[in-house]
Image 1 (tube, rainbow, N blue to C red):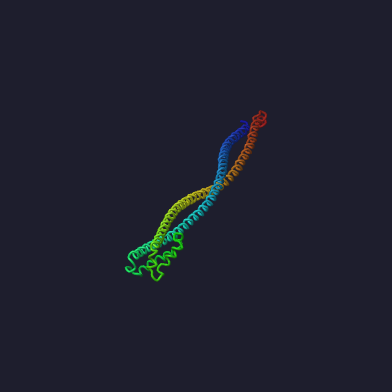
Image 2 (spheres, one colour):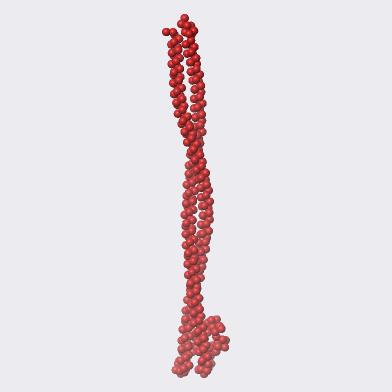
Length: 318
């Protein structure tokens, strides 16, 4: 065999090795490019999704913050209204208690005055019918004193019902030395005055009781309205406090998710930068290897061609 044949065989083996290496290198390169493409696509989508989600969460944070601030002000306004309603009810209750106390006192006074006047009329009637001898003058004097006391005590109530002349007539009773002589001629008129006094007291009592009934009804209506107002306001406060708490919780969760997404976004962004750089270097290095390997393959092919030439065989055989 020609010595050149051995060299050609070696070159052909080298050519086959280069082709085998090229195939293996291309397979690894394709796998790497597939990995680069897949990760680039996934991370790019993840970054896009995170940015879109952060935009949504930003709106959520702003909206819940605005809702929370609005609800907080509304709660304060309701609490002010609640304080005013309670104060108004307390004032009305205090006034009502005062009215009840005044009515009780006035009613008691009128009832006592009517009872005292009734007793005086009974005593004076007996004195008029049966004569002074049959009655204790002290009893009669006490009855007249009661009449005069009631007239003086309730002069404002009796104003208009008893004329000044009648008032003087009653107040003059019992002041003359002979009471029976002075009392008897005008007894009919005196009884008329006493009955007018009693009727005036009874009318005043009736009006007082009517006023009390009206005041009681008015207070109960006001109390019911204020209690309903207080209940409704308190319910509004409770509901808005719950809504504010929900808004605050939603806002807090959104902020936490935003922080987590920003951290993840930063990591994904850095990963993409590293990925692009690594894949670009891989592609550049592969292209360089391919070019160098092609040059080697071409050089081997040319060497084989030259060595297979008849002149080369003749020259190496001499």
